[in-house]
Length: 109
Image (cartoon, rainbow, N blue to C red):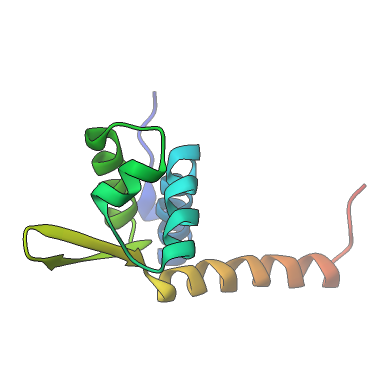
């Protein structure tokens, strides 16, 4: 496998790649959907809602947090997770830009 040369891409391209890579797993999509429904959640509640073991959920939460898609605050001995709205807004803006370019430029197929 070749090494990705991230320095050849813009900051936005690298940021979007990190976020989209984190979302590229069905368990993480399910976690994001669950967090949307409940607004904030402790890992144990996510374990109860999804058919995955606690260590697996924790690993997926770590990936989502590292990508900036979720935030976590410490509440006693637990971490309460919620969606980072600014990160989702950045994704939405990125895709809106792509969509607007599709309507302006010559279409394919």
